[in-house]
Image (cartoon, rainbow, N blue to C red; front, side, top):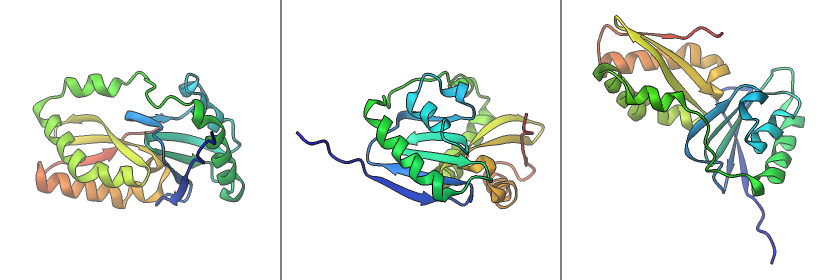
Length: 189
């Protein structure tokens, strides 16, 4: 019995340092996860192997998409084929049902009515576009009409996310939630 070849489609993102690798198999069946260090993914061999590649900065798994963010010094000419080879080598043994501790799930369960409304707007109007580009957004805090957000995946290092995208989020939330809301990025730690 011959094994069917894995189909991988590579797509650019608005971030020149991130590419989406779209597979014909799931890598994360439930939810999403971003790995920022090799220690974050020690229990996920596929992600750990990707971090072993020179130049990989961050990894984001969502449904059948792996978004790789690279350090600017590394060229895609050498990294892209290495990522594809790595995915092909590790995907057969990869469990897309893997669980990671998700503090976000606990946070969502305890949201105030205001934050619940904000999350609904983000889910409907913002997240689909960000996820389509290999990223996402997390709400970190909301107090006194100030919303603090943090980008994930490809959005985390994308030049346009700190200006145009943030302004679009602010505009949508002002139209649909509160005309006085301010939206800021959480500082990097």
